[in-house]
Length: 141
Image (cartoon, rainbow, N blue to C red):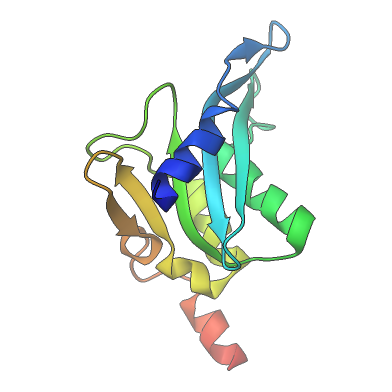
């Protein structure tokens, strides 16, 4: 079993779409992240009718990582609904991309699985070229 299969199977355990109330649904998108130390953390999407309080599975997985280990660097990420990502699937939304970049500058090198069968990935930095925060990180050095 390779790392992507391991991450897929752990995230898949979270997939069981449910309606929490007439306004909130959850577990219909799931994700797993692998921290710098190699640990895997999962998350699930929770969405409300207002939209303001929505949390994507990707951010929930990263928050689980931080809460449990204080780690901020992510090596790999997979996100999907009922099936593993295909083609260019599994892409984090703009808010998640921004969150990952702000969490750690090293996350720009995280691999995002876009096609499970071929194990094709894309790097976060390729999804956010010329990121506005580069200058702030570079000023810290």
